[in-house]
Length: 308
Image 1 (tube, rainbow, N blue to C red):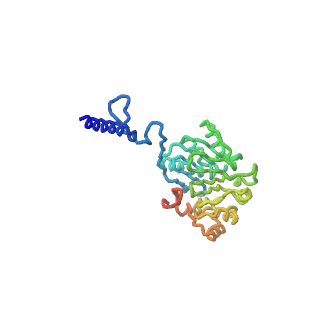
Image 2: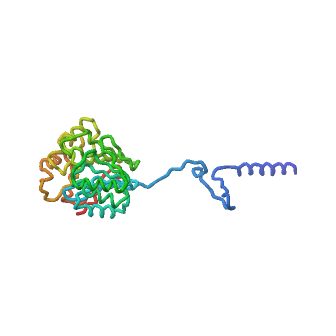
Image 3: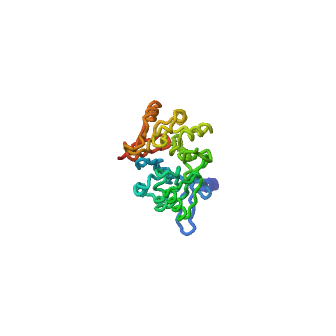
């Protein structure tokens, strides 16, 4: 009888020890009798990963005739605008941005003060919440330039100087850096153009504004990493830009030429078109394809959303 009681006592003790395991143990809530079973990673004090779903990077090269306007939507849905077309296209630019469901532009870049690059900038500033505005430190005597400065002032904003070494920080998934201008003064205003390289994992874009051979040579001499998958061809395909040496350094797979149909300048120049062909670069033109949208997942770039 005593032996039987001893066996039962041992069994009861073993059962109580097994029941003390802490793996997946229930945690009582402070205001109810219910129990919430938590995995170890969900226990108080455990480190949890914020797994945000990233969207593809989208780069929209708007069809604004003989002008430039580039809208960038980042993986975290931040927005960068590079240039804004002519005055005559300001409604087109504003409407297009709104059609993308955008009410805030985190960074705006006016590459240089020519009207075909900042003409619609005052309208953009007036119609959207703006984070930062970047422009090179050079003035222009036009009403277009004055309108932009007044819009900046009226909105209580300040202009950040666009200069080589400046970073645009809007999305931690991207590296957005300015590679030009590199000098304080230039004879030609085109060379004040803010040149921007955007890198997203293993893909990259180079936006050159109207930078000409002098600016291109400066960037080469500085030893900047110019390699990019997509090149926004400088100065609408003018022969004053996209030198063979510069193109060799960039070594793009694709090139975008923002240009007006049958424009009076003869852009893009046949010299540049032949040069791009010789280098094996696939060319997209806004005068032929309309607005061009490049999408990147960080590994590959697609141009499957082209509309005229």
